Image 1 (tube, rainbow over the protein chains, first blue to last red):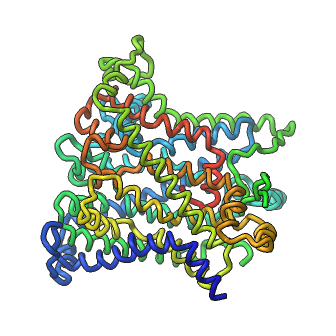
Image 2 (image 1 turned 120 degrees about the vertical axis):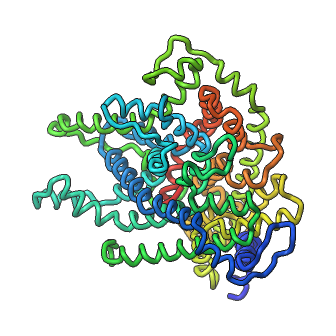
Image 3 (image 1 turned 30 degrees about the horizontal axis):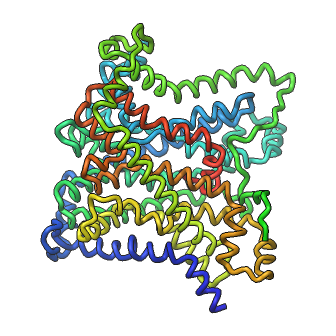
Amino acid sequence: MHRSVLRGLLFASPWIVGFVIFQLVPIAASAYFSLTNFNLFQDPQFVGLRNYQRLAADALFWKSLLNTLYLTVIGVPVSLTAALAAALALNMRVRGQSLFRLFVFLPTVVPVVAATYIWRWLLNAQYGYVNGALGAVGLGQPLWLDDPFWTKPALILMSLWVTGSAMVVFLAALQDVPETYYEAAVIDGAGPWAKFRHVTLPLISPVILFETIIAGIFTLQYFTQAFLLGQTRLNAASGGPENSLLVYGLYLFQQAFVNLNMGYASAMAWVLLFVALAGTWLLLRVSRDRVFYAGD
Amino acid sequence: MQATEAAPAPARAPNGVLPVTRQLSGRRVGGAAWRYVVLAVVSALYLFPFVVVLTTSFKPADEIFKLPPSLGSDRWTLDNYRAALDAMPFGRYLFNTALISSITVVGQLLSSSIVAYSLAKIRWRGRDALLLLIVATMMLPPQVTMIPVYIAWSKLGLTGTYLPLLIPQFFGLPFFIFMLRQFFRGIPEELIDAARVEGASDFRIYRSVVLPLSRPALVALSIFAFMWAWTDFLLPLIYINDPEQYTLSIGLYSFFSEHGVEWGALMAAATLMSLPLVLLFLVGQRQFVRGIALTGIK
């Protein structure tokens, strides 16, 4: 009994040691740094809660938080809906099904740097193919990357291209729905929409909740795509037009690695942690009556 | 004991690429046409950007900036690829990236699998609590630990080397640990017990029974670890300064900083950077998709 605990811990020790070195100690250090002024070259200087007070009065902090919340509250539902729609289409029984699935998944393996530059080209206001297509059908041609109103929709549009992993998870969930449920629904006179609304959706709702939490957490940490979409020749860590691309992770990066305000950036990291926890809690609460767990 | 070749069934059936039994009855054949239309449209939307990148990369500059944009060209050329390869030491970046990605795979294979063995095949008090802790750390925003860890590497004088990227890979990753644990649990206990009766130690069972039976999951882990290391941007951005040490991600990023509007060369460089991963995915897609299904995330 006692020996089995030792053995278990021994085999798990790589993660436990790594957890202490790369997470536990850094978490404690980060909490301390968030209470200091620290520029990497001098010793940290204790300032109490002043970093947090300064954050509350920092317009760019609020701007970056709102930019990230925009992507979380609007972007996540949009991209998960697209992933679900793609999964429904790819769940249809046809010849060559696996080939269609391959096509939809392929963009997900393109390196994010390459993918973002590809979209900078596609979204080029004048020569880009997106505006070319919009113009061809007589629609407006937004300045995707220069108009502060359109930069975040551009990010969301980009995210639709790489929904492959959520799509695969939804596909797995769709295949777990027993065929007999659909047959029963048809006998009761259900059409395609009623089948989706009253059979599919309730049965895959736990997976939707799970994917929403995962995507929400990833979106709160969002950095690379916004960084690369806002990148200009003279200012690598630009926040884009009128800081419309200054997402939270990007502002934190600027503070930590451009301005070397390690204390201030640490305070930002802690605010992010609390936002992530609060968001997850809220999502679990709101969804409690809407998610259906089979076997409950 | 000799391990059998038959892989155990994973905890959840693999999906996605398995052939589906076709039940196209007479009544349904007419209905199949619109399905193909839907799927063709969806596929076209996802594939279109690839077509644009490839055609742009083979076009001369004056045709790239032509209105309205068109996919065709009368003068296909390799000039953009030559320009991209002249402007950056692509081979060097490729080597650096492959090196980091390979060491990452080795580190994760060794560390994540042994932790997963403890969580799946050793019965010990505290095991479930540890699993919960491991999964819970996936929720922690990396920004919280990123700054102190950077400061520590910097105090050790190791920023500007690959060590800050590589060393953490030898301590297991929650995603991989969880994925392998799910897979290991599908290995029948009778096999483990039989080995124990014969006097095999846990390490022996891990090495000679569990690992040989888990090849699909280990392949999935390798593909994921390789792809993540290959595409990683933030950590190399923070830790690597010397152009000689650039990865493909950082190389492409700095190429854009210097040659932003040379779209032809940029699309050629993006194609070259993506090609190895696309090929890897085409070869290993079955394992890749199964890995996502085992864990629910990519």
